[in-house]
Image (cartoon, rainbow, N blue to C red; front, side, top):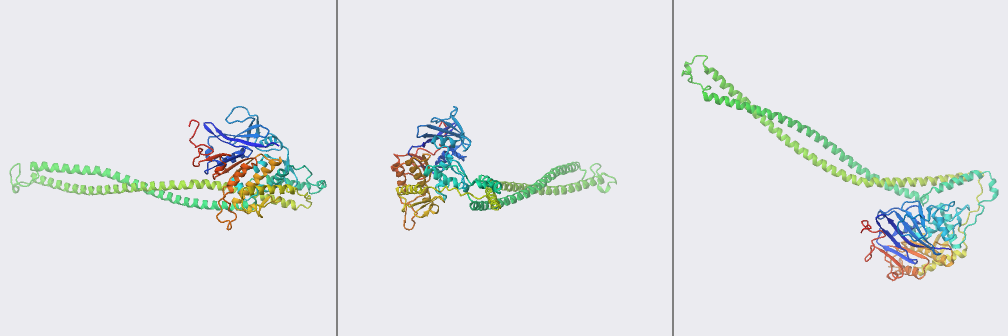
Length: 615
């Protein structure tokens, strides 16, 4: 059969420099600082091989198309071209490294279909020469066509699966897929696909409950197909409880912030009301001052006129008592009606009016002074109101900044909770349908279950020995006795199931599983995609400090022997993604990419954001 070799992964975008990595046909190592696109390389390769989506990251902004170069053992060179959010993949029968307007040699869907050949799964399976092989679909013995994604899950392994507790065989973690996933491993270990056979004895077709049971089975299968989260009901409930806790915390925090905001708004309304009353009083005072100013001018004008009348009378002697200025008569000789009576009355009137006007003027000045003081107080109070409103507005902006992410996070949590509740509802529906089926009075007898675990003992033993030899070559501590349980798909090393080990041991055992499968099948000419991509297989290892106290600790040379074995006895094309620096001894024999480490020339998979083609 054919095998595939990854040639290159290239991101292209208008006005953006190409971002690419060239893969060695042997060992390629991508390592360096976190958040530099290392794991994104694995995700992008998986996306190009038919994964449904590639979650965007800030660094891929401006890039619109991905190219994945492939080479088959028969010499055929292919380039898969896919947009970052496309459901179709263009296939070019050449090594394409740039954007092109040339028509593709084929355009296929990313989604596998057993009834159509126009999808990437069937296309790649044809290249490998294994299209049409069948695996079990369920425990009732139904079969389905092999999907290339079934193979990709065993050769392209992300960091969460690498160190996860789930078996390497059960890649999706979905119960409805377990039979198929075990059947895939059986196919790889034996090279034999599943034959199409009857799923139940013929006499069952005549049973009274046949129609009801078939309908319920169909409803159960349809319900299981709607499940999208790789978790059982217990795990879903645990996730839902954690989400509810996060939601309660976010709601409590939001409530506190909203209460603070409400209190601030109430204070603001009180201050604004006081400021309006203050401004109204200030307006009234200004009107009074304007009127009193006119009155003061009037009083001062009256006093000035009285003063002028008095000065004129004094100058002419009209207001003086004594000898008449006209006839010289003494006062005692002046006859009645003389001007003395008149002038005396005028003097008294002028004096009285002057005193009255002066008193009014003095009272008015006191009132104006009091109103001026009130104006100053009102202006000061208005300034204090402005300062208080400015401070409150600043506090409100700070609260809004704190509320914005909480609102977004709460919306995301609500959406996640809704998805979990939908999943649990589907599980409950499946249970209800299964109970209804079990309660049928004439239920169809269940045919003997299909046995995806019926792998010949010789093939299982051979595979166990292959994993043992790999662990030994990597100097993993212990005797490395390997047992694979086909019924549970669990791997045990030295009597301990992989799922019960620490993350470091889980990762190295998973890596040994993938490498050994590729190495064994290459040697025997059995089915395999031809490449292995491992994200973080040895990142959690550290030097042993006390081997007796903690036998899980790795010896200091595990990493070195890990890389040396991949070079000395290559299982196929291997691509390793790690944070840690690989041993210096391999740098001349492997293709190395270093992202943002001392001495490296490359920032990451993508160039810095501000770099363009003109840089």
